Length: 284
Image 1 (cartoon, rainbow, N blue to C red):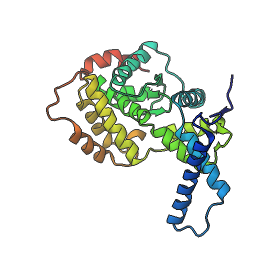
Image 2 (cartoon, one colour; image 1 turned 120 degrees about the horizontal axis):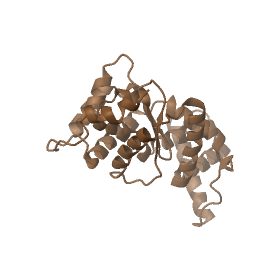
Image 3 (tube, rainbow, N blue to C red; image 1 turned 180 degrees about the vertical axis):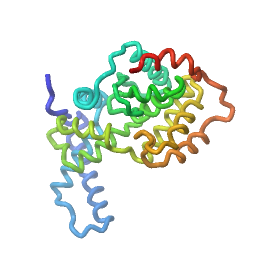
Image 4 (tube, rainbow, N blue to C red; image 1 turned 45 degrees about the horizontal axis):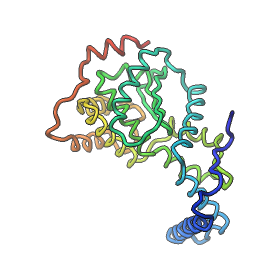
């Protein structure tokens, strides 16, 4: 069954008065922000009420609703933008790396790791636990520790709910969210755009880097893999999208290097021969 809306249904049983107060507070906050910004014309109270409801809807987004939206985005992404690389052994390898990293996370989602056919050196993620790596990236990565660092960064975007927050801002601004529910058709298109063509904020990228380092260390991978891969691509004329956004790659590298524990023991995953045999020999 195709869902045209992700409806939030009736307000929870805490009482309609409670949620009316929540909405009113949101309206007052938005109105105060307008005055603080020096706007000469205040927004009509109906617009403020609508935005308050929209903000409430996003704040109550459940994991299940996020997964359903991620599934819709995944179907469009695979159908319109990329083709899945048909090598189950390679997909299993990437999934195993991802699952090792997930052991260090605290957010439980049904993650899906997908290898897509593309010469671009890239990796990206969308909401609901969907992580993608290109065949171009797998060919550029030199060992499993480097791959783990990249996948850990994308997992960090999901555990940090960066895509959800970015979509919330744009959906409310564009009026995609309504009092009747979230228009999933328009949200799916927006999610596709966010995954492929919209850079993350400085705070989101730095937070994903920190999370990646934490997951890599918890899984036992050598943290030099993440640093070396970023260092190797930072100097390229056209670095991949996950390194080309603000802040500059050099700033991100410096921030990560400072967070590596000085007493950290060498981890695993640096065997380039093993990686070449398991991954690169299976690439187009």
